[in-house]
Amino acid sequence: MKQVEKQDTVSVSLTGTLDNGTVFETATEADPRIIKVGEEDTPKAIQRTVLGMQIGEMRRVRLEPIEGFGIRRKDLLHTIPKKQFADKIEPKVGMLLSMKVERGGVTHQVPATIVEIKDDSISIDYNHPLAGHPLNYELTVIDITKG
Image (cartoon, helix red, strand yellow):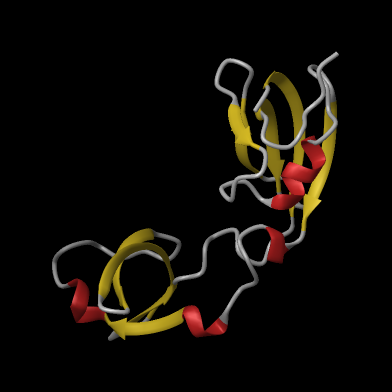
């Protein structure tokens, strides 16, 4: 039987959960996740897990925060004037926003979460919502295309 090797393209079904059981990602056999072993778009721990797997085989892997979406950074918590929102939206705690941020002279759209609302200010968290969380994956190989 074929086994996953470096440079292969692998179709997997998966379920990604947090330690409390919350499901944050799923991919089914009908709509699989494609992993290109050796490319940067898939965490290395997941790539190491699928190496050597065969079609139909299931494995579990746990990614520590640094391997997933990083640790939570306090410097990514910002307070902005409430008037900056004007009449554009009605801000609510937990609301996910798409904010424009300038880095190195280039403007980027980044996700941000409203974490606190006061009379004249709003606290926004620019950390990824999964930052700081260990990520648990259950992966099953559906297909392997040799690289």
